[in-house]
Length: 307
Image (cartoon, rainbow, N blue to C red; front, side, top):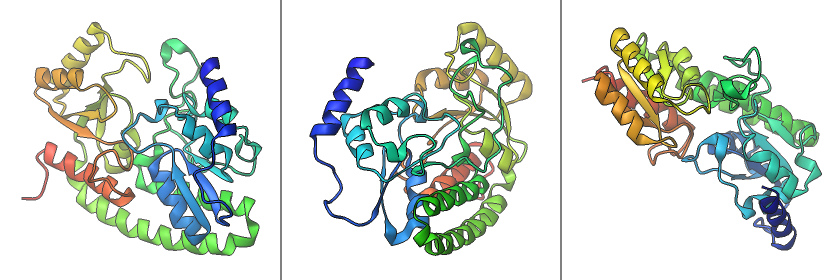
């Protein structure tokens, strides 16, 4: 890790910036495409936004590239999920980038989870219990209602750094929230048949989605977040699924397929592969289509899709 860090530092210093020289837009780096889209909606023509991930990665372990350090070195603002979701890669990149504007507690460091009360907050931190969710479940982007809180956090964060543009940020935010409200009302109607449907996922990515739309999570293939499954855990999970008549096994696109397929086959549940952020599948090209794809796929898997 130290050698990698030194390499990233060297590259960040020597390589040119990817943004156009002399551009007067606010240069924003987001950790995931969902946040990049929200920032564009809130920032409008004032921002130039880049996402570190493409949507197919595991948010906890986005592969670090030297170009990321370069991009972060020249950023005015960083927008991240927070709740330590990115702790597996972002701290090292920030150290390599050597950009005080976007360090934690700096004005350019915006946590989209600022106004969110997380679920599943551990009572103690212990690596044996899993160390990927030390502040609670960070996968808040799967709940479109929480997306409204995320957009507010982004707008307030941008206004804190650029108060001269606060009125424009708030105007754009109001427009975006109105669009989300319309979409949420439609999604709640469409997802109504999912209420009470039980599922197992590889990692607890879909817990916020489940709470929003009334699904019931029966367990995870992982023992706990970041703790790999053991044969005994899988056996117990399969027994539980048969007893509770679990409908669906969700295999997130960034997690191994083979074991999820085995669990689904052993229990008679329907296996579905779902993205956990925008860009995870070609159909999820923006936030609205990401949520719509998730709802549509689960409706089909549970036999609840309209005929």
